[in-house]
Image (cartoon, rainbow, N blue to C red; front, top):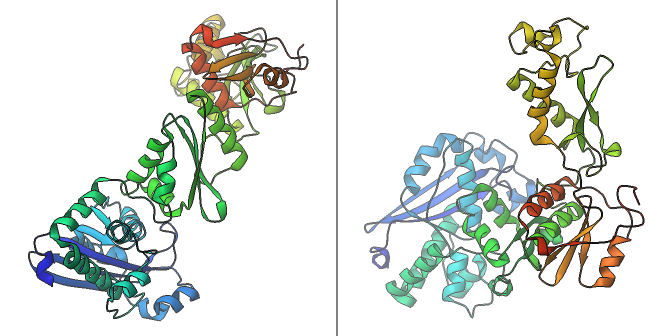
Length: 474
């Protein structure tokens, strides 16, 4: 039977046992690898010390106890041997994202970027045996009459994969199996819990998609001009990009919402992320700590920045705002960085306490041009300060009232950079305009500011002012 796989590229049938299901937190306790190349088979297996505890339920499942691994080598100690076993071979595993993900993460902690061509036997079974209702390892064992030396131990399960491969070769022949392997290697492999029929229904249209973990917990929300293409790109990158691998391992379901275009998708994505707080979205989260610098003359006639906090901000209305920043810390760090880079006086900026006419610390180490001691004339210093801050200037709202941005059959209503909602008819436009105070959102401000620079004028509709606008003006 072994001769049936002689003509294939080098193969590695792999199984691991771990302390749990999270490759960032949990660790490998055992690896079993069966390699086949040029007619020769070789088995390599090792228990290893994970360096963390083994939960009792895992001990019950695998039979691997802390006492069994206490004196064993770590993954790092065995890494060169593992690399030698897997190098230049097709990595074959059941639910391969799990085994490959753990091994890749273990190498990554050592600074090694491990990569391999991967074939998942769950996907192979679905491809070759579509009428089979289930494709977990126990079902495959029972369906094909495979012999199990030790279930839930690494070498025992790796040998089951080798037997299943041989069954496939015997039943379908080398040409069909090669074709199946090539198809799995070329096409992005779906996560094991995602039905191919679900993915087939995803439209090639603009919109937002939502990945859910177990118990319908929001995992990740994204947007695209082609929802299906973007969703599939997550999965095609999962064997190369660690973040995508973590996402693919956790995703259990996918939803999507079509929009009329790119702007609608961006606005919807921003709103949904702030409402649902998916665990893998870092950007676009709601913040209550927005702030900005406002520069005014102090009692000594010096332009001095004052931090305006979220509760006092009226972006789009207030003149002379610079930022915006997600936190006071970010605002201070930015101002300090600009001061050092441009030889501005940190004393006059309020970043350092100084007495009138006394030099700041920066002047003493040649990081200040001397405005604090009169060596740089104040008008020149003020001009430099305003020039440096100019790229951070918060734009005031350039319209007399709210506007509508046409996109397809919809109109997105914006007022003083605040997104009020999307309307499908005139009644909805009026309802949104009169709907009360809208909260300023920095991400939407940046997005709308960008799009207004390039949108054709005919897509922007001037609308009547609200009776109670978001700025408090009539």
